[in-house]
View 1 (cartoon, one colour):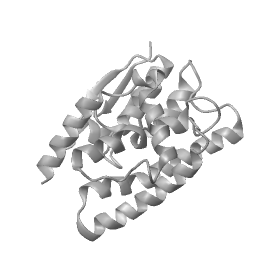
View 2 (cartoon, rainbow, N blue to C red; view 1 turned 120 degrees about the vertical axis):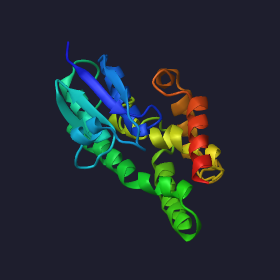
View 3 (cartoon, one colour; view 1 turned 90 degrees about the horizontal axis):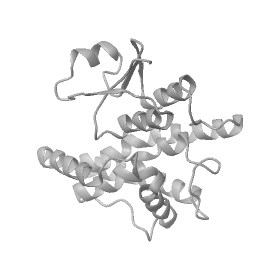
Length: 217
């Protein structure tokens, strides 16, 4: 059996992407919880460039960056395909994964900054949501093709974490009046029975993020 370990945080959407991919493939792994306030020598050794989670350790070798890791898992392990087989669909999936990677930081700034910087970040998020709302029209369930895959795993923060962050912070970015297609997609994503088994507990996530905002005040 391959020796697989994941260094991450249980409440991180980035760690969660990797766990989701491992579970789709049926890969058993050891989860090593990291402390970002006191980064371990292991993390600094495995990811000396960015010093961030998640890091996958497979047979003693480390792979960093959540989306890179998901692709590695898809190519390395047997099981259902995560990336589409068709080259065009694969390109589309990578496009949306890159989109979420580029837009994600603005979401964080919308919740954790104040004043003018926060307002600028909110405007960025509204632009992102407008793009997503347009893409998800006509009751579209998946970003690429007719089944859940790579781009949808990359969208996990938008689907679950965004709403939890809104509730934890009191900062509201999404309304069904402004972004009806996005909201319909999000509800389907987090309530779909196939996805529920892979998603963390919303109540536990909310409690964790509320505590973070209380510390930040």
